[in-house]
Image 1 (cartoon, rainbow, N blue to C red):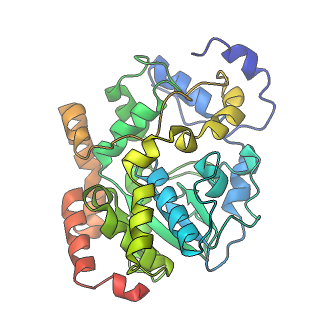
Image 2: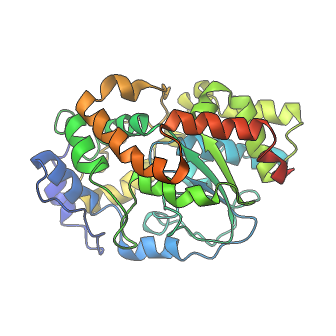
Length: 341
């Protein structure tokens, strides 16, 4: 998979991202972080950080592996269907129509350009402090155990070879090792990302969506998102078609539209990877909820629960599921969505 790494590494002449600390890491994690250091350039990331927003712009905000691609597709289809745009399904890859803010410049995508339909929509993994302000935000969160398992699977076959980094090493030395960003070049941990957005979950321009709700009742979730976007959620034909185009059946039949192959082809050489590294690792999966608790070793789950305590101190929720149920109940009683009618 990485045979041509040395050759491609010589081509990497763009300023690299500062890499995560590798002290005390196993060899596989160290190599993974070295490769990751070439994924973004400082100049490209800063262009995203300081992009000019419009009040009607919409950002899909997540930690990695929390339903980002799925929500990009939902929002893109809703805006195109509402505008009767006939080209909603004709894109090479989802990032061409819903750009990834942090990576757009490095992939040759202009964040200032008009998009196929209104509103402009963007994807980002920024925590609140770094996210461009002055727009609207759909914030999606997912059970941290499931996020971790999905993240490991996503990197396996791309930034490390199968078997090179086991799940426990990945959790301890990458997921759990992250904290509050020390500078604009670093990403927040799952827990710090959540806590940065939490004070804004009741803001008029923020909609909180749980990944598990998308799984359990896609239509109701699409209606909530449509309502937030100012699209008629009572239009059954429009909603049903958006649901169809956002279904696992539909998206899994069009894997190359959701596989980030443009990013990988543009940035793999700068990571010391073969051009096709990671291109055979699909992002569209069934996304079973609860898989994390079955696959993650018990000692790591204990550490994850300990990290959740920092969330509990702020939110009062002792578990992710308690948070989801409580917030969902509030929304169902009209305590949240009425603000977007």
